[in-house]
Length: 633
Image (cartoon, rainbow, N blue to C red; front, side):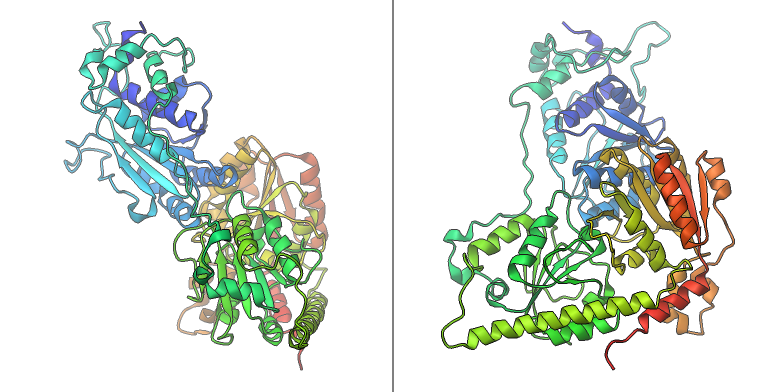
């Protein structure tokens, strides 16, 4: 029989069973912030073989690191923290994970209920800490023999099956927290028959298969048996919406927006931010089959890589809505959500196009429609959506125009409009490039250089605000697809660098993170994560001395608010920060310097901090020059 200490300490028994159950569900990475109340969890992590522990001194950065892990893996990492305000530091990343449906498990240790509300130290009301921003919360009691272990495992397995957003486990612990030997020389002990399912535990204690490494922890053979028996507990499957077999469906049930997709001659395919595992090739293949132009948001990873058709390079230019209006689309088929372009929502989906239909295809739940224009939403992946359309409304073969000639004329008109659109977009892009100085740094030039030099198998993380907009309006000349990662669920300024680190560690490849200066200042201690990351992380910071996006917004024309209140100007540099965290430092003030520095960093293949100094006045002038380009008289 296994060492009776297995049941000698309830805290470590429960935590070991939970860690083992999560491990057997494919969840093996933990982001742990040190504390005392969560030491029973740390003891289990030190005992269970196969788990990976990443220490995070700052809970906020740790949460974003776990968010990046979830983005890369499609499987949650587990955040572990002590009681009190520690878990509150997870909140921004939890909100981002909820909005973008990224799997994360937040496991907070808590004080026992008799201390909550008693003015005890480091104690707050932790139940329901994240409100509506988690898919599910599990508020457990203190480990007790009155709570069946099978019930515990069923609930942990249920939470481990949720892959479309964050979940929260709150587990209070009573002291003594760990099975340390007491002054008498003994250890706390408990008998298996004290459990409601104690007979089963007794029978399982002789299970020979261990799941723990050599450790001062009690043996957990019984716990292993609980999670390896067949079946160990209820099995939960993930459901990403209904995959509709419409081959046999009543045609009357097919939404008019879907029917319009099948008969329209002029449509636009839009690729927004896609979920983990979605296939961008399904979108490009669909656009080519339909013969429609494709607009690619930067987060789709398809920008500049669409061949065999017309690509709309960007929407945030005053000329583009006029060009699209002349094309006169009948239908938009939008894959994914959360487009960066504000103009897409405010012009193409505005009253200027009252008759256009919008079919949205995304596995993300809920309303994903800021313009309130979606006619029909198919809650499924891009691949599934294309199959559904093929099985319902798209012709099996290329259809022939009817004999009356009307349909033939309509087809020809659509082709002429598309050809004219392609010519106008090409003329606009060339005119914008002519009006972008190549001998001085600006956001467009910086984006072009990174798009050109980024290795094809590596990811690009973009900060929010001006940075991601610069990449969204770039027209990459390389023709290669880029994996672009960003926190665009709620577009917060904090945690961006930590997210990039977490993504790269799980992806196993170097990542380049291009951030604004204020974003890095909000996440400065994550340079420690960069320095200690398993793979190289290139942290490139565009230092334009403040939050300069506000100089391009209506607030800049309002005299009642001083400019420095919104732009928060500063004179800080980041060389000393690189030195403090032991990172190689590079500096660039011209396009040639940026190109040489980034190429050198890639060649050295190690983490580094690259500071790009940018004149905000010159950058703003380039913005206005590009925006004032006109191809229409």
